[in-house]
Image 1 (tube, rainbow, N blue to C red):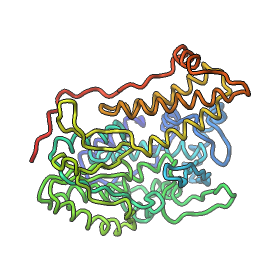
Image 2 (cartoon, rainbow, N blue to C red):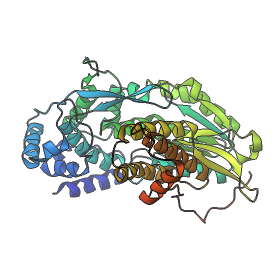
Image 3 (cartoon, rainbow, N blue to C red):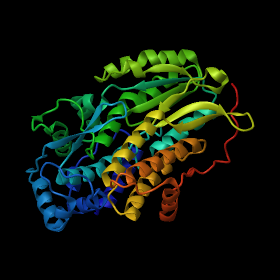
Image 4 (tube, one colour):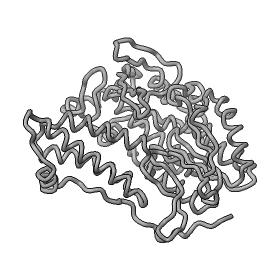
Length: 435
């Protein structure tokens, strides 16, 4: 039986029987599945501590995978310590990223395919993060549509404090055991959670909790954990006892819950930290609050940020209220900083090549933030990038290269991308109604 057929059978069984525990999954980590995983790997990702790149590993791919499968079958496979790297966050702090070696990423990708076959049948529709066919942009749109047309009046905005650093290993393994009765696969997953982390200073630490951000296996493990911690609880035990409708959405560890009833919102606000504490998690108190978010509040309605957007009530040209999505100030400033560093570092490239690479970044920005109602946001970002190009191209030498007239002619000739709305208008939506 091929791996694809086996995974399809697992998915069908998981969908039919929500309590079935799967056995003999470890055997699917064979040459076929690893070749499938290889095709999905990001070949441009940074190398781990062994400094082996995808190009080097791929030169003798068949032999390398054959040897890797042999070690997996003989239980000689060992997870290699992760290289830690820190990147700046929008608030000035540093975000830790874990960079596994290529072989670990390869086996993790094959393992993710197995886990997805099972858990994609279990995960609820409210979970959007790092799932096939779902996206952050779609999550924001779903929340925006529900808030605009659902008559919700209150939103609980919450933030889990250091989720990826405090995920409990023992509890996660118990959660996985609800669906997986294969000790070999569970031991393999545990290896990746407890593997050492090499800090930039050269010191290796062995974390007792958490899962490294950057590992291929980390997103689905986080989704499994929060599926049991939040999703099932918010939709069933808590949701079933609410007086009015509730709308809950989650993307990885970012989530929002909207309510019609103030009583339900206050109960969620009170019970949420108690629920999280049962799983050794806690809330960032300064980022958790109840907001007046319904359009019925008029000017008293409060804006909030979610997945890079600020959601704020406004009025259209005909005076009708609607919930606008605009680029959040933090994301705009973060994007400006990243573009500044990129243009500054690459300003010596030939102009066609530089504009081509800048366009790649602009295309990604417009694709995500080019939603209806956010034309000002993407136009502001375009102006920032234009000014940065003008500034740093004039610093390529001691002599000034451009004035504004020649600069505008150059970017027009080379085709610097102009901001545009990429979201299609949904004509099926109706105006909001007051409840």
